[in-house]
Amino acid sequence: MRTFLLSCFILFFGITISAQETQLKEDVLEQMLKPRVTFDSSYISDAEVSSGGGSVAVAKNRIAVANKLGSISYTNWSFLWSNIEALPFGNGVENPIEQMHSVKISGNIPYFINEKWFWLTSLSLSSTFEKEMQDSYGAGIFSFASYKLSENHTIQMGAFANYHPTSSFGLPVMSYSYRARQHDGLQFVLGFPRTYVGYYVSYKTLLRFGMIYSQSLIKLSDTSTIEAAGYIEAKDTMSNLGISYTFDSKLTLETDILYSIKREFTLYNSGADEGESYTIAPSLGAALRLKYLF
Image 1 (tube, rainbow, N blue to C red):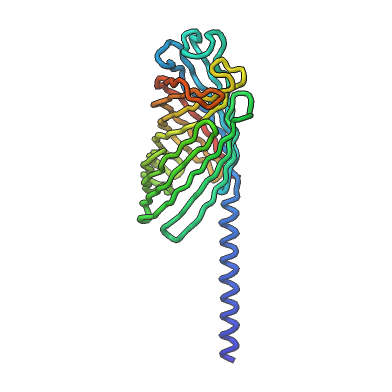
Image 2: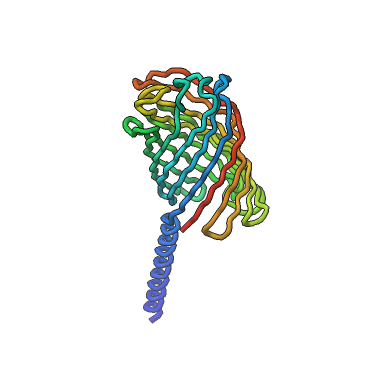
């Protein structure tokens, strides 16, 4: 009788634990699949191009739908030129570029090795172009390992690389983070390509400062006055100072003052031969971002 009761208890306990583990896995999967919609808009004020007298301001709008496993986004850039005749490229009469577009899709592969080690790989496909999408496609990979030194301290190491028929590159990823997932007091991430420092004034209000490096390769139109059917490789280092406010578990609003530390771009012809390089002087800007989690 005791053996029978013990067997029943073990069976019931095992079924209960199994059910709890199944529910936990389902809850985790549900959280990973929840979509988040992000809309952000920014404006960088008029700045001189390569000390030639001509200048440009840039407005950027982006919308993205993402969850923990992947994302899809569309980005639009609008260019506002001044003193076109003094620019070191173009025909001196028409706007060199009016708009650029980018469509990007990515997938994430998270892997928990153990309590201390975590590995994340992200693969992406994108098309960034002025008018025609042909020959504008590229692919990227971002992969890093994260090691938890303690409850508050973590280090990350890895690399990211972009492939494009015209120009490809790879760079290391290195960072140290402190309380990055906490919602009180100080937190920061120090490294490359991103550095970030934040302080929670309250559970809902975050003050933050950061710097980020980005690179993109853009297909010019077949009738471009800059380089017909060519490409522009743009490299940006941008800093931001702003505030983030979480209204509830679903909606977050972020506002920032921006400062373009360094902007440079290189031209390539249709045959992928590298041409002239230009710089855009530092300038101020502003950004607004809305996030909604379903």
